[in-house]
Every structure is written in structure tokens, then in C-alpha cells.
Image (cartoon, rainbow over all chains, first blue to last red; front, side, top):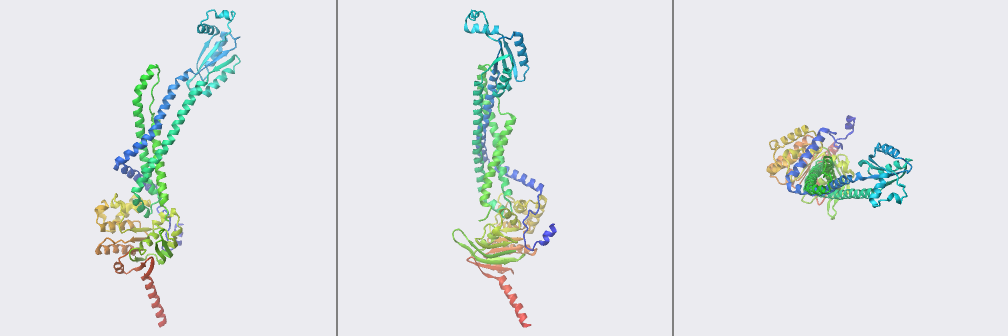
Length: 329
Length: 238
């Protein structure tokens, strides 16, 4: 096939093909060379590199710091989840033995952490204490109108709104149960607060990601400007846009990865700074709350996010410049 | 190999750099384009290297109409060209070796092949011992030889040189021209733009003279006419 192509090729005619074919070794070697040379270029301009990396790192650290705050808030309110309780009012005609049998059955459910039985006698006694009426039985003409109660505490991982509603419905479905009381208002408020915080983190991350793209893009654009002549020469000797783009993409990647690592360090430092006061505060409330910093996986995510944003910013900048210049007028 | 069909090049400011130029350069020919400054020599090279496209007419190089060449093919087309500049345009941050290796690295050659070809090209221009040096420590003549090594290292079909001897003394100029001739002897086409008519005349190659964007003299045409005339007269004699 190649021979026949050559035989049809007239003298002096140029064949426009990648003559050497795809060579993985050369391709990898080209990437390695671009990666090393672009890293070396950053090191040779330490001041400019540090300023750019710090600017990106500060922008990156804000959403990650908020993420840490959110994570800790969720942990703190996780303690409140323990009070996610439902009160089941049983039919008045049931005896204590039946009540305890029902309580025992509910205790075995996955979503249930704890079950407490309040008999009608205990309930009346509590009522007496609460109201201060000593002769409360006389008020009710010698009768105890209160039913037996079962107080069900949901497990922490089943204390979200949907699981609590499901648990309420399951208890209500029992024939022995008259009514189930579940106060969802505080659950809804808590969920709304956490959702708002979570959304703020997302919006902030999106805005700061845009800022990072602009910072990296501008850095790469300046880099391209300073190497415009070199690009022109390389291009005249048959370099493709991909070849020209490569070192700039690595430059963006190095900026982003370093900024991600610095952002992690900033967040870790900030967490350490506030850890002391927070510990003293929670000690006052006798809580077992512990401040959680950036976990290893989320630190890795922060570095990766920095790398991806750096790469994307560089890609946008270099593609824009190359598109303006690649085709002769 | 090169054909200019009624080529006009007009810049946005209205300046006409080339006016209805017609030219045919066969494969493997060595040719000089001469003329005073602003005559259009460099513009012709810029059209061939596809730095610019002509505003009217057609430039065909290696069988490809450059006016219609797609952007993605330009890099592949340029790999058939070698370019030598008056100001060398070497990359100051890189070594002589890396500068010469540039066309091969851009084309994705293997490391071993790059090394072999670069050393051969540097040997050709007599600078093998300077491969690890930075271009700025070399003399102007040496820098030009590095530029030539870079232009021929990938064995292009066509070598283009824009005032390659502009900054060199006559002895070095002759040496540079000898290098171009050596390239031409192994089959490569050479187009040299120079204002040095004496230098061009000292070589027995075709000379195209431009004035204000138009071809005013072409020794190739004269030779062809002369040969045609000789043949005619011999026929007449018979």
C-alpha cells in the first residue's frame, strides 16, 4: 500500500502525514520532558511562582475551610440526633404486659436505638409532679385516663427526616397504637441550616474556582507572551498546537497541584489555631465533641481539585491564544 | 515544486508587497531571489512558509495550494521545509543540541534518532564540539551555522533562507553558501532571499530579481530562452 502510494506520488510533492507514526516512547518522553522543563521554569522564577501559588491556594482554602466547618457542624448536631424521639400512645385498653411486648418488638427494628416504656401509672405520677396537684386521681374521679407510652429513640444514622417519618408510619401501622407524636420542626430546621451551609460551600467553591481559572489563565497568558517568539519559531518547524500547548498545560498543573497542597496546609494550620478555644468551649457544655480537620481523602481531593483547575485554566488560556494565531490570514 | 500563479500580496494598510507574480521553481533547484529592501523577497518566503496567505492568486508548494490549506495541515506541511533566518532566531535558553533537535522533537522522532541526526547535522556545519553550549556564547557565524543545522536536520524537501549572510563577512558568506550547495547536491530545493546581488551572481544558480513587488528579471527565463533560441537556430541550420 505504501509502495503504491509512493509510486503515485509525483516528484516534489509533499505528503502531509505524521511520517514517524505514533510512537508511544517518544510521546511519553515528550511529556516527561515538558513536565520537567515546565517545573524547572517555575523554580527558576521563585517569586512569581510563590505569589501565584499563594493566590490560588488562598482561593482554594476558603471553600475547603468552609467544608471543614460544615463537617464539624454536622458532627456537632449529630449529638442532637440522639434526641430524635417518637412517642407512641397505646390504646387505653392494653395491659402493661402487652405494652412491654410491643416495646420489645419495636426494640428489634434496625432504625431503633432505644425504647423506653412509660406505663400509665408512671405517666400519671409524672403529671402529678409536673402540675403539683397531689389529688390528681380525685380530679379524674379515681380513674387514670392516661395511656401507656412507648418512647422510641431512633439510631443516629436513621435520624433524618425521611427515616423518622418512615419509623413513625411503621409504629402507627400497629393496631395497638392510637397515635404517634413526632416533632419534625427541629429536624426540618436543622436540615435547612445544613443544606444552606452546604449550598454556600458549593457556590463559594464555584465562584472561587472561576477565580482560580482566571488566575492560572492570566499567569499562563503572561507566560505565553514572554515566549511568543519561541512559539513562532517552533511552529515554523512543524510543531503542532498540541506540542506547543503541552508545557503550558504542565505549568498550569504544577501551579494547581502546589496550590492545592498549600491550601491543605493553610486549612490544617487554621484548624490547629481554633482547636484550643473550641475544646475549651465544648468542655463548658460537657460535650464529647471533637474538632475534625481536613481528612486525608479530602486533602487529596483538595490537591486534585487544584490540579484540575490549574490544568483547565491553562487549557483555556493557551487554546485561546493558539486559536488567535494558528491560521495565517 | 513551487508555483506562484498571478500572486498579489496586499497588506491591510494598502501597501502592495507583491504584484501579479508568476514563478515556477522545479524540484531540487537552487535559486536566489534578489532585490532592494522592500522589493518583496521576504514576502515571497512568508507566503511559502505559510506565515501569511496571498490576497490574490495562488501559491502551490509541493503540490498543495497554500491558499486553501487547512489549519490542521499547516504543521505537517512545514515539516517539509527548513528555514534559515538572518537573525538566526535560536532559542537562547536552550543548548545548541536542543536548538538543532527542535524540528525532530516537534515531529515526534525517537530519542536515539534525534541524537544521531542532530550530531550528523552539527558535524556537517563543523560545530559538533559546541553541542552543549548556549547559542549566546557563539559567534554570529557559528550561530548561523547552528541555524542551518536546525533547518536541515529533518531533511526537508525545501530549504528557505532569508538574508542568511546579512551579518557575515565575505569568507563566512561563501562558507554558508557552500553549505546550501551541499544540501542542494543531495536533492533538496533551496530558495535564498538576499539583497547581495554580487554574492548571488558569484554562484551559478538561477536569480530572480524583484522590484516593487514585481519580477523584473529571471535568469532562469533568460537561460530557457537562450536554450530555446539555440535549438531553434540549430533546427534552422538543418
